[in-house]
Image (cartoon, rainbow, N blue to C red; front, top):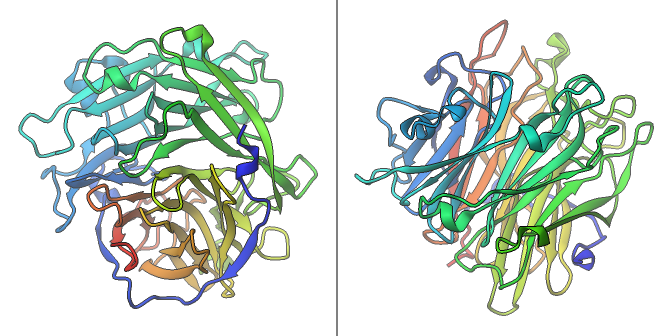
Length: 495
């Protein structure tokens, strides 16, 4: 077990400055609500950068972008999310669906879409894998797959199928690994367990018939609130594959128990898939790893599923606050194999934590790095300005520079987009950069998506790409007016 890899020390840092002149941030507009028919509130903006384009998913649609100009790949606008499966006559995956992740497989240089689909009372997990890295290629096509979930999810005490929520997908060398939260529809959709599945990546990359996915459910008989939900699967960055035999790792936050305000450990999980003899596959965990005492962002001691407390300038009047989603780790669990000097493997992930002294006060970004050799890193990105930083996503470049993007909001600051960077190998202090300043508030909902996306450009293994949402018009009444912004920047220490 890799229990010794995560450090117990958690160090809060003050940011070195609000802007670093040597870092140039380039941005262009992503998918906006006005481009999607019947746009929803929970858009979960995420995306990935490939060798030739950037691709974004927001709400129920996706769009490709020229990395230099920001021009649309699909000239008519965002493409309905079920398009790959419709093109391949796979009706179980028809229909609008949120809870989607869009990845780029660095090792194979392919696009990957993972999404949950619900229709007529049946649940499916649907995956699409591209046949090339170029969205504009004349022969571009998607290989599509589906997994019926009915026999995998399990049932509650009323005999009702548990609801699959918050799926995540990660690329490993032997499989695409997926995790799904199990929620009880008769108990306010409370988290009661998880499912972890391995999909046959080798065959899927060729468009062949995939071998039966291998899935595990934990716990096998859900009987109460599950405090270690929302597992993040490791996802490879860079062009160096993991060493042979290294299994897939997952990480999850351990929420405080009802009536408590703090916890002091994280969880790790290990999936060892055996495609030759599936009965020898194993999924183990949770293994508790002490990381020091913390309070999750916006934690409510009287209601552990309530993480709504992020203020906007309008909050004093509307009494509307934003959900920090501080009860879980945020995607991604970014993996990188360093083969130079020093040589080690690195797993990096982040979450929203309370940094103020009072209950449900100011939030910041907590990050953790696990290493296969030597001590890892842990720290908190915060700043003495009273603003709340939340909804992070993290990655690192080929020389160990870490960048974490996030939303930032406060009583005198409209929800905006920012990022901080530091060098993990040299243990430098974080520096914050502004990505995009919002000019309005979301006044009619606490929902601010449930994740964003920081990825690293495989073309140079240096450039960070980040996507998140903002508003330039106050969203009131029944309006849905969100916008997204795509940004990229490169640190001067990455050659």
